[in-house]
Every structure is written in C-alpha cells, then in structure tokens.
Amino acid sequence: MSIFDKKVGVIGLGYIGLPTALSLAANGVDVIGVDVKKEIVDSLKSGQVTFEEDGLQGLYEAAVAKKMEFSTVYPSADIYVVTMPTPYDERTKKVDASYIVRAVDCVLDVMPKGATVVVESTVSPGTIDDHVRPLFAKRGLTLGVDAHIAHAPERIIPGNMLYELEHNARTIGADEPEIGELVKELYGSFCKGEIVTTDIRTAEMTKVVENTFRSINIAYANELAKLCRQNGMDVREVIRIANKHPRVNILSPGPGVGGHCISVDPWFLVGDYGESLAELTFAAVSVNASMPEYTLGRIADVMEANHITDNSRVGLYGLTYKEDVDDTRESPTLQLLDCMRKHLAKGFKVYDPFVKQQICDGQVFSLDEFLGSVDMVVLLVGHSEIKQNMEKLKGKLVLDTRNVCPFAQERL
Ligand code: SAJ
Image (tube, rainbow, N blue to C red; front, side, top):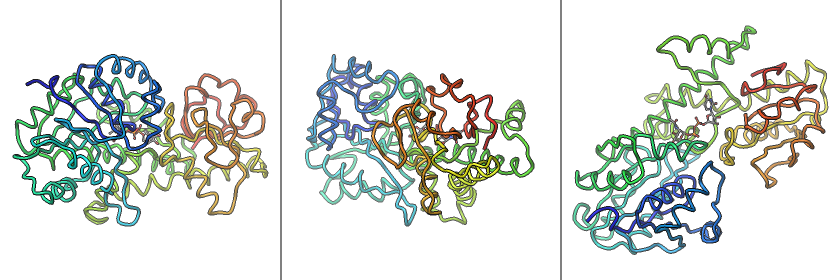
C-alpha cells in the first residue's frame, strides 16, 4: 500500500498546517484539513486562503483540483499530521503543550487501530515523552502495536514558504524504522530535499537548536549594533566587511526578534535546562528582548537632537514581525509600543500595508496619509512597498533600523 492509498488528516490549518496540507494534496495524497475555527474552514471551502504568502492561492487551486477537503470535524484517517501552535509558558518559559495535547486527544477519539500520529509543531526535547505518549497509555493503547507516533518538525521560513517546503531538508523522528520510512514517504510526496530519519528526542532537539542558533547569531548582531553606536561606528559596514571572511556570517541587527519561532523556541531550552546551563542561549534571548526598548531610546535621542517634541509628528513604519508577511505575533513594533506605554508616552502614528485591521492606537491605513502626517519616519520593517517608494521619504527625517533606506540620516 503506497502513501497515495492512505487518508491523511492535517490537524490545524495555520501558517504551517495549511501549506503542508495543500502541498500533500497537490501532489496526489488524499488529504482532509481540519481546524476548529469555523471561519478558517469556511474561508477555505469558499475558495479563499487565510493568510498572505507568495504562491499559496495557486497551490490551493492545485490541491482542491485533486483530493483536498476541509472540515471542523476530526476524521478517521491512516496518518494524522498535527501542526498546532506551541507557545511558551510566560512564567516557566517551558513549552506550552496544551494545544498539542488537546489535538492529539481529539485524534485518539476517532483514530482507527494502527494509525500514525505525526507531531509537526516545534517542541522542546522530551515533550512527546512527557505530554503525548501518556495520552495513548491513558486509553490503554500500546505504541508500536495499536498506534504509532513520529515527529517531523517543519523548517520553512515565512515569506519563502512554498520554495522551502519543496527544497529544504527535513528531519523525521520515530520509534520504529518502518514508521520513519512511512512518514518519509509522506513528506517525500512533495519534498525534494534530503529527509533524515532519527529518534524522536533527537528530532525535537535538532529543531530547537536550529532556531536557537539563528537567535544567537541575531543577538550578536544586535550587541554589535549597541557597541558600534557607543563609538559612532557604522555596524552595517563592520558586519559587511567581517562577512567577507570565508567563515564569518553575521546576521543583521534590528529593532527586535519577532514571530512565533525564533523569539519563542530558544526559551524552551532556558525553561527546561535553566539559565546557568543554557547560559549562552539565555544571554542571546535577553539581548534580543532588549531591542524594542533600545530602539525606543534611539527614537527619543533622534527626536531630541532634531528638536521634535510632538510624538504625533513621528511615524512608525511596519507592524508585522518581519518584511512582506502579514503575521504580527511577537512583533517588535508592538513590543516597542508596549514599552512606550510603560513610560506613559503615546502618540506615534503607525502604518503597515499588510495590517488592515486596527490593532494599535495611532494606526493609519494608507502610505500617503501616513507620510503626509509626520516629519520623522522610523523604518521598523523593510517591506517591499517602502523599498519601491523610497523617494516618498525624501524630505523626512528617517531613522532606519533595517538598512533599507540609502539616504536615511539615522540608523540603529
Ligand atoms: N531578524 C533580524 N535579523 C536577521 C534576521 C532576522 O533581526 O538578520 C528578525 C526578523 O526581523 C524577525 C525575527 O528575527 O523579527 C525572525 O525572523 P526570521 O526570518 O529569522 O525567522 P522566522 O521566525 O520567520 O523563521 C524561522 C526559520 N528558522 C531558521 O532560519 C533557523 C524557519 O526556517 C523556521 O521554519 C521557522 O523559524 C519556524 O517555524 O521555526
């Protein structure tokens, strides 16, 4: 029996679940996508994808032309792919596995004997042992006999998801080699990258390590930005030249690290292993977490140096966590506005072409209205929109935190 004869349920149709379900279906796998949010399922049934990502609507058309259904009801299936969010617990910094636990529990209510449950969400090492295996045991199900589990962490980057889904290497963790091979065959239906199989705990750790590595690299760039500012040096020039060394690749400083991955996953290691054992990781996440407040300080300094006293003449460009995505989770701009409120200050204008709903005070909804109402612009996200309209910034005082404006008077 090949993978194309099996029914696959993708549980959770968010940023990872939806493109994964669509890729499987577009490549001939029989898929049912499930989400408890009726509005998501209704939108997908009516022909509309639920977030912006290059090529997603086209992939949707290709998937529905084959075997793709959407439902709010958990189905009977041979393989379940669970793609629920895994935030961290604010207090303990440990992974909050409650979404996964609830989803797997619902799967177990309907799952036929012998099915395989694949957890795709990013989790800290040991999460599957501590939170998922006991759900099977509680129902008297013996893993390896009555059911099987695997971990297949996603690796795709928002903004280039569809290319990366197809081309990135993947890791599959499984208890049983045959299940590793089955899940490899499943992802191999659309993934041309190398698919490595290992045990579940190694797969869990590997994914967290990848995002922690990036977090540490960004933290180093952020620390360098602070050091260079102290002595009036241009950090971008320092990094640009240092990166010409064949074994140096420093990332870019910015106003903070947002999104649901790089700003979250390294905390799992701090939560699980403690600040003294995960010392470097803790230092890195702390440096990154300091950046919104540091950026607010830079804005205040630039305003003072230029005799700008009215906050409403200052505009923050960008609300999403990075360029050309519509995701505002852990957005550095929102963190910066939070810091501002703590200092009892307010009044900045805010604009983002991808954010069409009001999510903060001072928000305006057109670039021209935004630019027409301010004297100083703080570039917090380097969306293509502003790169293509750079000349509209001429005549403004520009504080560029993303190195996108060649004539900015001020930088991070
Ligand atoms: N950022 C910087 N400087 C940089 C790069 C990024 O400040 O040089 C900031 C961004 O502006 C953003 C944050 O970091 O606020 C995270 O953005 P990102 O583009 O680095 O990463 P994500 O969160 O969009 O996606 C990451 C990716 N992980 C790695 O590259 C190791 C992606 O491959 C993962 O699949 C994804 O996390 C995930 O879901 O785990």
